[in-house]
Length: 215
Image (cartoon, rainbow, N blue to C red):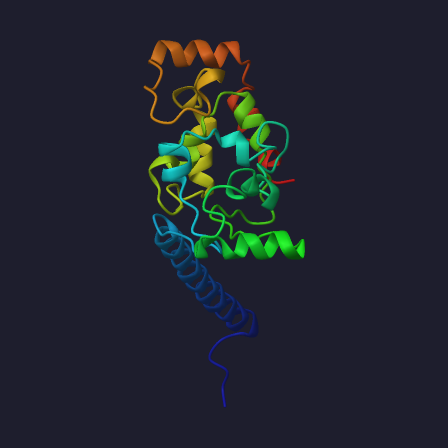
């Protein structure tokens, strides 16, 4: 039988079809990841103890740093230990059924297994301390945590969302004494520009360089 296409042409057609198929598959995977990310936003994450930031932060007035003890000094903000919780709850509501996981943790010495709300891939480097030091308030990424009876994610945490801030950080900056304040008025454009100069932010090129977040 006479060969219609030359072998080289046939190989080219096969490669083109394969590339199209892989491209279509990649598009589907990307779209699915976007949908999943969108679904995760505004969905409360179940916890071993249904901790209410609304009560502890909004009503009682606890400072973020009381539970997240390393947020100013480490990449990881830290999670409240059993002993931190017992500072209050060894006296307040100490017999409440809701706090049975806390009592078990204290008796066994095993820490409470809190579930992450804000997750980043392993190939993404994020440091809480540098953002706090540069005036990025908690609410810029975590939203009005003081109004959440259960904690959910308010931001997509996708690369373009991060880059949008890194390209123009000034509108997201706050005076250092307001970083942990919820619901304060945002600084004016003039104040934000002054903060950016005072805090000596690195240039956009450095802030958007791949190695800044991918190490």
